[in-house]
Amino acid sequence: MVISFSVGAVISLICGLDRVAILQVMISRPIVAAPLTALFLGEPLVGLQIGVMVELLWLARLPVGAAVPPDDTQVAIASSVLAIIMGKTLNASGPELLLLCLLVAIPLGKVGQYLDHYARQYNVRLIKKVDSALDRGSLLGAELQHLRGLSSFSLAAIGTYSIILLGGLLAIPFLWPLLQQPLSYSSDWISLALPLVGIAVILGTINVSRAITLFCASFCMAFLLMWLV
Amino acid sequence: MMTIPRKTRLYIWFRLLLLQASWNFERLQGLGFFYALLPGLRKLYSDEKLLAVSRKYVGYFNTHVYLAPMVAGAVLKLEEDQASGNADQAFEVDDFKEMVAAPYAAIGDALFWGGLRPLAAGISLFFAVKGILWAPLIFIITYNVLPIWFRTVFFARSYRQGIKSVEFIQKHRLPDWAIHTKEAAVVVLGGLSAFMVFSQLTRLQLPSWLGLLTIIPMVLLVLVARRGFSTLLLIFISVGSMFLLGVFWADMVYLLASWGVK
Image 1 (cartoon, rainbow over the protein chains, first blue to last red):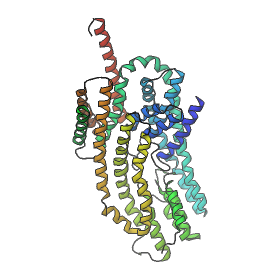
Image 2: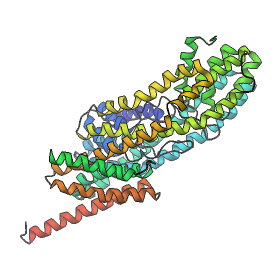
Image 3: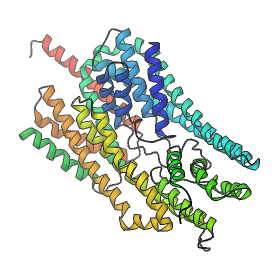
Image 4: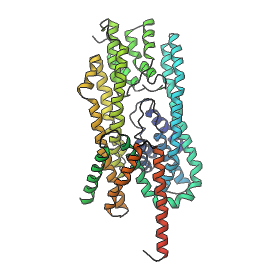
């Protein structure tokens, strides 16, 4: 469990920084971060399934200006680690366990939003330090203050990951015996519903004229092609 | 004449990858922009003048992260002209920075976040739903080609062209690209939805025509989302309904079986 937690923490840190602070090459997207985590833990398919379910959920929430979307990166990474750890601890497998891990992690993604917000708020303090460094004539000091911002984003990423993981580790052993059977009746449909909800939210916010018409035409055309061919 | 050596420009380019390391609510990317440009400013100014110019750059700055190199390249060129005394006196570097940052941010947000990201996600999810483990790599490649092109080619181009680099945006109608990319994303997401529903029905051996009914809840969800409902609420309403329906259906099957009905 400690190894799984540590591997997840390293990936959570790297992907968490990619999300805002450095690079932005999108390794922080759930479709990348979750399979990557699960690959390092030896079960890449678990991560891929979680990535499919989480990727589209908050894709419509754009990181525009000062807007901070919920932390889907840490939700994806922590759910993957949880699913793998819990699979071994509870000696269980299948889509029901993945779903339970994900459904516990999703609301905790809001914590990531608050921590990210707090990290950006904390970075305001760096401005004064930069100003005073420049007053002292120290350009190097000013440069270093900029790099110090990385630590607040790192702490926000690791903090979110730890909170989601801890929440899951505490809640899932209690919830699993209660929900395993009922979830098995609907797990296939819930797994389908999650990406569809994400797509609906994207369509609702994408600002394309006739988005619904375009979507329906594309859906029907693709569906009929698959059905009839 | 270019006075900032290629090696320094390369260094600035790498520093631009850390543009948002100290993102904050007061000056947004201001410190990052200063941090990125500093090696170039060091080549142009020294001592007190360098400090004075640096103070100017630690102020507010915000643009799209992939278009920031385009702003940085042009700003470097303008600073270079100013340092060598060839600058247009009527046009301040600060004016240019403020003039382009917001429009570039709007174009970048629409093109990359609003259009390209859902498009690349939609394409890669086709593979992921099929269980193909290369799906994340497909996403990374599909998504990153355009941003890397913008970050590299336009940094070099805007350094060469200075203020004139703005003409590229006008000439190539980047805002129109954003709209077309979003439309493509909607089409891909329509196809993806159909694919996921069809695959599910086939796997569960249910009649395929049922899938066409998906349109109804999808349109309802879109309309609800447009009214500003939170995504989290929509997730829990959808999951909760599915869960209760599943339990109800299982009970019905059990009940019918106990009555001897198949």
